Amino acid sequence: MATPLVLHPDRALPADPATREVARRLYAATRSLPLVCMHGHVEAEVLADDLPFPDPARLFVVPDHYVTRMLVSQGIRLEDLGVPRRDGGAVESDPRAIWRRLCANWHLFRGTPSRYWLEHELAEVFGVRVRPSADTADEIYDQLAATLSDPDFRPRALLRRFNIELLSTTDPATSDLRHHARLREDGLGDRVIPTFRPDAVVHITGEGWREHVEELGRLTGFDTSGYPGFLDALRKQREVFLDAGALATDHGHLGTDTTPLDTAEAARIYSAALDGKAAPEEAEAFAGHMLFVMAEMACEDGLVMQLHPGVLRNHDDDILRAFGPDKGFDIPVAAEFTRGLRPLLNAFGHHPNFRLILFTVDETVYSRELAPLAGAYPSVRLGAPWWFLDSPDGMRRFRELATETAGFYNTSGFVDDTRAFASIPARHDLARRIDAGYLARLVTEHRLTEDEATETAVDLAYRLPRLAYRRSTSS
Image (tube, rainbow, N blue to C red; front, side, top):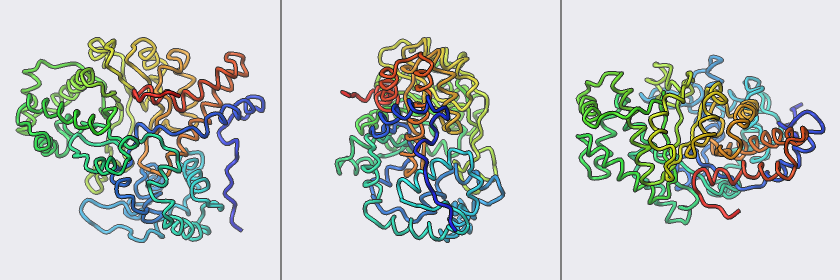
């Protein structure tokens, strides 16, 4: 007999009865608030085309590196999970077989946030009532496949159903934003907006860098064969993104160095890179210099700057060659913020038009570096727990380590970070439960009154993300 899939109403709330009772009331005040999703990786094309999701495997498994990395860690090949190969080699093409592999290995996700998100999606979004297993895989697959053919489960319908007020995609600097143009034509331009991500054109030893800067030149009409034209092209593309509704830029760097280079030195390194002669240490220096330059541009145009450092991308060379980036082999490294950000913050930390939101996957820096920085510089906000820390205990630790120094109001509130569209409400739901539990403890310890905790819970869930990204609110 199949085990029922039943979500407990108090899941992720405190175990202590008195604290849980307060947490229930705080969660009730936030559970129905609109979702502000300012750091997403859902493709604009998905919403522009508004086609039915193809099948359960390609919705829940193939694009979700949280799911695939756990299965790969137990010896299942990416090919067997339907992940396309760069060389066009053979991969599993039967979505039912892929789905069966997930369900047969459901036990691997015990205790992980992926389990929470997947169960929420299955039960709350798609109405599944049995727990995934080898025995129930086909039954669940058939139910999901039938549901996905319903027009009410197309991307735009789910955007409305999920109560997503604002969804920001993450787009390369070389994007022509044509899918966003289609969304604007359909009246969704104020609801689905782009985010400017220049990584591919500032990391000069990255794969395809020269082609990317050439494309940037073609898009903007500037000559990117020289450093001055490169900067002009970046400024022009930022204007294009702003005109399309963008509120932010996003920067993924291994380190946090922001030391500016002399203009002549930056131009020399840029030219060397075009000739394929830039040394690794020059590439590192140029990347740090470009963070400083991006901050300078942010002071001019007002785009909020997001920094996501401390991840060694594509750790497995063979996986990168065979499947490309973002396949679950990005591994955190120790991060340092205090010294690295000092040049940038000395120059712009008090600028009235500058906003910097800092994310980390190294939680050891929360209380030592990030909370003190956000608690001092008016331009700095702490981003929500990200990636490996986007978990129940990770979010609890974030509140405990950062709040005493930074407070609540020097944070961004919760902003999700996912490619898995159907998991967005699950992630916000979990964050609201964790914040309700943390605030409830402050109430039961008589450190906050319940009315203050309720107001703070609403701020964290809704108002602070809008304020952090300068999306005006009258609420």
